[in-house]
Image (cartoon, rainbow, N blue to C red; front, side):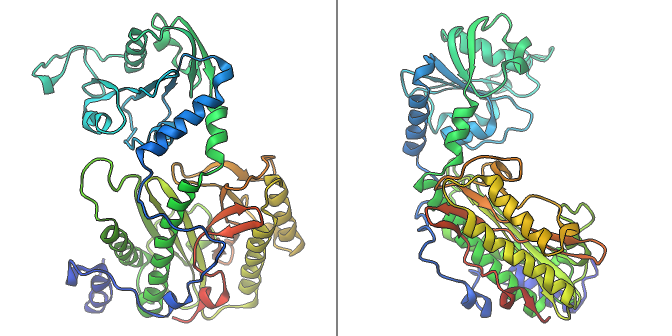
Length: 455
């Protein structure tokens, strides 16, 4: 980076490097433009769901499975384990498993030694662990035993230990395809009839509880403030900076705002499920929905730019993008932005309980086609979002006939992309389905006043 004196003066104070420890301050005109909406959910006072919520959620799942006459549930999928148990861990290549008997609130864990404190200090009846991937039989350096040998099949290791607890027969619910583990299961659970319970878990995850919605709203409130700071920073300092520099400045401010409020202790189970990501697309990069090229462009007058943000707290939150246009602009850019704005409104009005996702998608795409912008359409208008995964069911897609229910949350992304002219407009937001229609969970306005400006 060519760090001129002017660049240093513009970027580094924004990063807090010249005033370390100072709490970031809100200021500028953008904060005054944030909106109030009485339909918006109340923000949570907590920064993660309590253990009791997870126990109630597992109890609800077990109740829905009663007719299947299961002896236990085996969980192997990372997002299901996080959703149902509240144990936030890093999956990577290491193998995990959780065994939940149907007749008690016990939970038995199987995982690597690296996470033994994490697993045992939350909801845990018992924990059996291997040393690490790849594990050699009997090798536990942390216990003073160092052995060199062939790697253990860790999937088989997990299933054998579950079998030793007596769960080697009968009907067992699972959140995976047993064929995926056919070799690992052989000889350990030959007497088990596995029942796929993924549809039951999915049905629960589609509709958010009030506690989940309130936690997502807290993340969106933080993210809205981060967007206000980002807009003010760009208006004040953005011209002549690269999007890399802009991203660094706004990321630092946003992270400090949240963490100063959460006051993390560094202990397990505090400040968990936390993601605080802001980025900036500039110019031609905005013309590609999934830009893979280098994000190192200088912001110039006349550029389109997009601030992308995803914040999650306790695993819940949302995404918030705002597509902006700097002066000067032409009628073609105004038209594409207006069609996007129209489609946002269509999604809000049409997203009601009892309406199919595909119907909402069809109405948005029909408006795009009628407006003469079909060639700039690249993707569906939205997807389910909680924060536990980047994209979740259901999808606002022509092929998804899921019927909307109150409490579902979707992204709002009727983007348009003109790669030939080097720009695109793709908004996003969290939209909560209520009995009266969709409600945006951010307080960042979707207006020309916010998105069209001079630098």
